[in-house]
Image (tube, rainbow, N blue to C red):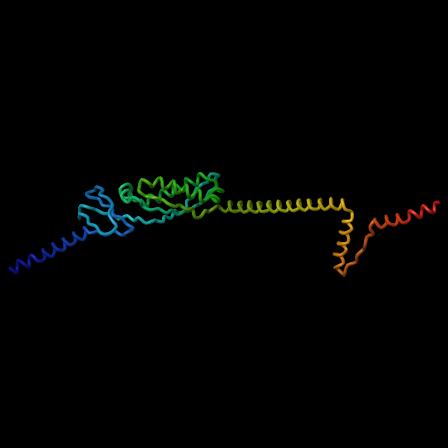
Length: 263
């Protein structure tokens, strides 16, 4: 009897371990940010989780899908813009799985597929815009990229929320040309500002000349003010010009005497 029990004991231990492994394989735990897509004999059952649930061992197969936002780096893509300028642009995309069943059934590898779609869409959009638009209206291009990629990944249960163009690498010749253009633009603005100042100054001088022409006494006041400003410098020799009005005063004084002498 003991020999029989001794022979059955290893079999019982093996059966117990096999039963425990079957039970353990039937118990599945899925995190809060995950879902378990269950296939039963190749047919889709649905998404399970989060938490603890059971599946049928051997019959069911479960695949975990992460529902968190995934950051996807799009490497530098060389493209030719609409105005025939060769640029290298890299970007970053943010997407998440909204339908885990479609992400498993409709596409083999949704991450790699989204990565490939993002690269081709980036080159396509860059070929439709000019360089100035790429540099100044980057937000518009980001929205256009996000819309194009999201439309193509929607059947896979993937939602693309944000696409951002990070760096735009220009050829050295284009950098030098843009630097010359910026310098010429600054010089143009400086000349316009200087011309406006000269024009405003000439208007003020013309207005002052009209006022002086209407009031002759103002020129004498300006003359005395100028002498006061010159007198501050003590190391200067000042020659006072005689105003023509002084000679007119002498003429008025001498004209009655000339009349008396003639009589």
